[in-house]
Image (cartoon, rainbow, N blue to C red; front, side, top):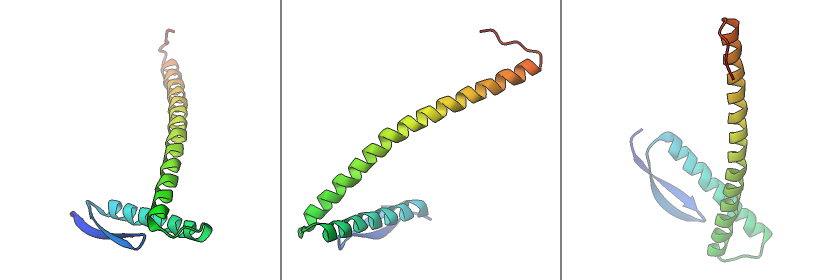
Length: 105
């Protein structure tokens, strides 16, 4: 797929966006639907009429979720990488020792 323009609708307004591939297109469509769903939920739960307020609330909520996800994700990734490196070191050491090579240290 070459670059193409798609129309994304957020809060009943259309936004033309240039996408590079099908994955980007799908991702943007899903993101727009998530934003619209959040706006509908805020409309239902709160007495907010101004779309700008709904968009601001949605942007703030999504940004807070992203920060939390990044904070937790980085910690989990670092722990997982460290654990996997330790496991690989054990495997390499075991293989070397079974081949008669001794590791100093």
